Image 1 (tube, rainbow, N blue to C red):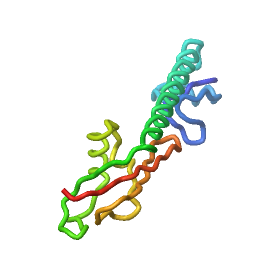
Image 2 (image 1 turned 90 degrees about the horizontal axis):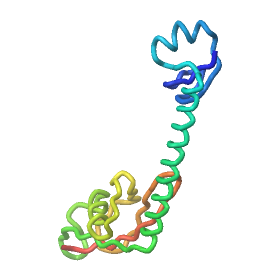
Image 3 (image 1 turned 180 degrees about the vertical axis):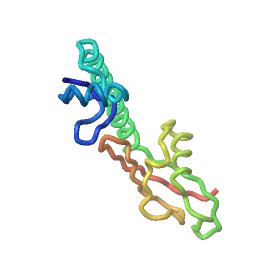
Image 4 (image 1 turned 120 degrees about the horizontal axis):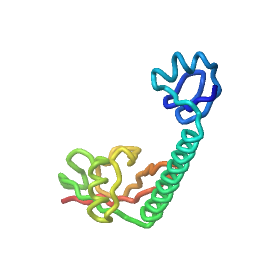
Length: 148
């Protein structure tokens, strides 16, 4: 019997896949537990529509990430931090402060977890941090740290 899986099943397949299973396994285990549905024409059509919508959503997100990467490439962000003189800062500049400054200055909303700081920023100066935008798209962001 052909069924469409509604959950990942170890050894059988992933969610949304159409697989061939024995009749007893389908009738006695998969269908009563709502882990799978029978592969009727309507269910197959629904599965294809869901796959198409998922693909379009992924392409849109990929294009959005590429657009943000293009904006970040030419941008130099200024981050203001409290300092103690002689170019030293109280504490360090965090990814959350960078994300807030990015939203304020450029209008780009980026999650703090997507900003990777290689070494702690504890002094005034120019730095480069890496931004992971998803779909294997990365961008380098130049940051100018100044004292308040």
